[in-house]
Amino acid sequence: MKKQIINYIRAGYPGVFIVSSEESRVEAMLKIIAQELECRLFAWSATDGLLDLSGGTAREAPGPFEVISLVSDLPEKSLMLLRDFHLFLEEANPVLIRAVKDALRAGKTATKSLLVLGCRFALPPELAREFVRVDFSLPDKNELAVVLDNIAASAEQSPPTDAVRDALLDAACGLTSLEAENAFSLSVVESGRFMPGIVSREKANEVKKDGLLEICPAAEQLNDIGGLEELKAWLQQRKNSFSREAQAYGLPNPKGLLIVGVPGTGKSMTAKATAKVFDLPLLKLDLGRVFAGLVGQSETNLRSVISTVEAIAPCVLWLDEIEKGFSGSKSSGIADGGTSSRVFGTFLSWMQDREAPVFIVATANDVTQLPPELLRKGRFDELFFVDLPNQQEREAIWRIQIARYQRVPDNYEIERLAAATNGWTGAEIEQLFVDALHNAFNKKEEPTDLSIMLALGEAAPLSKLMGEQIEILRKWAKGRARLATQPKPEKAGRKILSVN
Image (cartoon, rainbow, N blue to C red; front, side, top):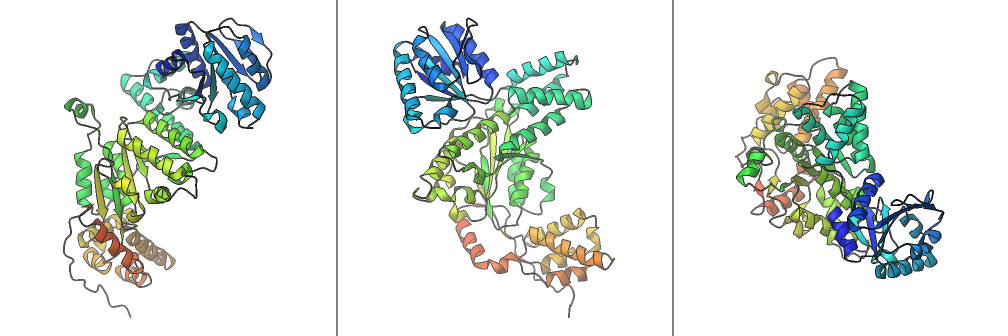
């Protein structure tokens, strides 16, 4: 990051827009850059005026016009840091815009650079091409280690062991320096020592502030999913792919998988269980929130997401119902000015070129809504199709669901229940048993095979309501996707009880 800014200044770029919410960190880096380039560094804000950070003097400049007028008075080889200056430019005052253009033109000939610092890139079209954008990355583990050591010294805490230290730094990845400092301090206040769990909790709170990303607890395991043995085996084969041994072996990081199929068949549970298999944090991206109303905000949101995800990596990134987020990218762009296409293109480029160890798990119900570019080989390692559960899978699902609600599966005729629910998804089977529990609770008794059958007779599975759509999905998957379960012939169903 420092080298990139130095190269821009040496190349004579008169305007640099630094996107970051960490003013102190950026300013500390700019002081180092000014020393290396033998430049004078000035900083301006609406409250402090213009400060000479190299000489310690100050000049009054309460407004944007005043500070721009002072650019001509600066000595050659000067850097002027403008804090929150983009907020004044958003008003699109033509006089101010012209003054900035003139200052940039004059600065280029006199080796003077304007450095605008803001938490988001926001400039009027007249100035957008006048500034080069630099996204200031979140602190890495080495920088976070300095923060941790400072907190340990100020709190008079003994240095944590290597294992705890690594866990603390892993938990803090994705936070700003100030956020990490607060999380480390809170850990000491709450528990009297450094606790990675508290830091992880605070990171989850910080990450979900903007509503784009959410750190999910990976409570589900593969054993909580009935069936999908081919998919489970594929994941187990790659469970150590992010380890140091895999890197030393020369194994490339797996990119991820796309799971398409019938709603309610365990796609989302598989995404959650994937993080458990890899023993990595699980981040869920809400693609709908990425698309904001302000011009350019959607692209900014996606860059923020990518920056955070790569800072937390290695991790699992879960995109639920991805077709809803990117279905608009297939349009002509008339409706949204091409925003969907641009965001989709940026995301595809990141998927293809990323070096950070991020495993993407995307789920989709309606694969026909997905852009073909997303399905091209190289985006994902594998494409799996999840069909309605077969007899053996339904038996496993019944056992899992009955045990989940503190009942003994062997007290029920599992094989016959599975046969009676042919065409039902795992989610529907769970809800069926929950309905039986409610009915039994009202009668102050335990659910039985009879009460389950009564509930069964009052509901219609998705396979009946959406039979045509499911058949279309099956035809699409044939020859295009790998089956999550090897097909097995269904047993002839037998009536469990006669209910009149």
